[in-house]
Structure formats: C-alpha cells, structure tokens
Length: 141
Image 1 (cartoon, rainbow, N blue to C red):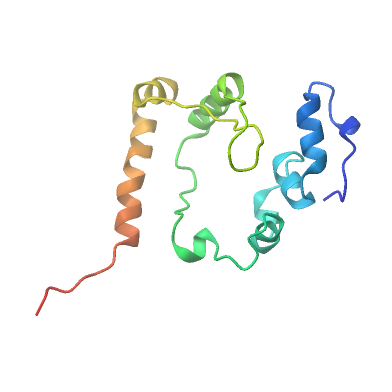
Image 2: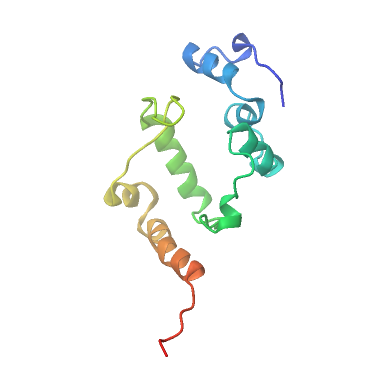
C-alpha cells in the first residue's frame, strides 16, 4: 500500500476529479478501490479503521452478509462488469460524496444481460439467506 498518491501518477484516461479523490483516500481504501488490491489480503479491521468504524462488528460476524462464491458464472460476471463499466451512473452518492458507479437494472434487463438461469441463481439468494439466518422458535407452551 502506498502512503500517499500523486494524482499525476494515475493513467491519463482517469478523470482529474477521480485522481484527486483517489489521492485523498485513506491508503487502505485506495489500495482496494484504485490500486486493485486483492480484498482477501486486506485485514477487515484495517478497513473498518480506515472507514472510521473501528471496533464495529464485521458483516460476517453479525450475520448480515452471506458470502456465496461463484454465485454467477465467469461469463455472467464479465457481462455484468462490462455493463456497469459502460452504462453506470457517476453521480456523487450521499455517503462519501464519490461517484456511485451504479447501474440500476430491472429484473428483465438483468435476465437479458446474464441469462435467465444465471439471474435465477440471484433470485434464490434471499431465500437461502433467510434459511441460513432463521432462528429456531419453539411452539408456545
């Protein structure tokens, strides 16, 4: 991780505003968002501290996130990434003031992009999450 970043060191295709924002990022955040660090190599406590959430339970610890490796095929992921890269919204979001890099898709548009079978895998995830996090309840006595 680089302690500081010279905006001039980024490729010229990077918009000047993004280069300035990248230079101002905490090095841990910048390593993930700009420098392409493998997320598995960045300690979650370091990231939480960089985001001002030191001591917060991680999503994995509090059960609020379910990791499902290879939820989509490589082909579907590539199609989704390409669509986000070419059609995303770049308006600043309300959380950090940075570009959202967001692409809103209807169900039909997602299915057209990745295929019905791949999209169906995503539609099943909420049910799997509820089943994984369900609390067993006893019948009243």
